[in-house]
Length: 178
Image (cartoon, rainbow, N blue to C red; front, side, top):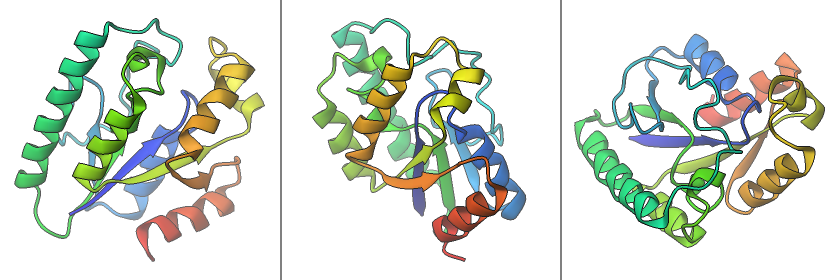
């Protein structure tokens, strides 16, 4: 199984990339990393959280974040066991969120990196023009978006989503290995 985690600030185009991937390859399994649906391949590409888990939410307690990280890891291990060999699983967000995204910022980011390493996931950062993000997600500040990009870039392979369909298609072909 090939596991791909898509990262980036809210509004960067993770859902758009997932929809493009779905149009290219119907065998891809999409899994939301949101707590209510986590670890269940459901074919739903857009998490539909309407900002509920926005990058600007206040941090949860460290105990709750630690409990969620254990829950995510266990559910992912069961997902890996249930998924046929050779499958491609694409997740919107992933364990690197621990320590980076505001919701789980109180957890040391090393925990997210360890979980990501244990799961063998490939981390891909979706980059988009900051002005384009601000149009869609005005609750985020320019500084916060830049801070998020800096943090994600430490651990992710970068894929550009610069509103150019050709550039995105080329990036997706490289991501899928075609």
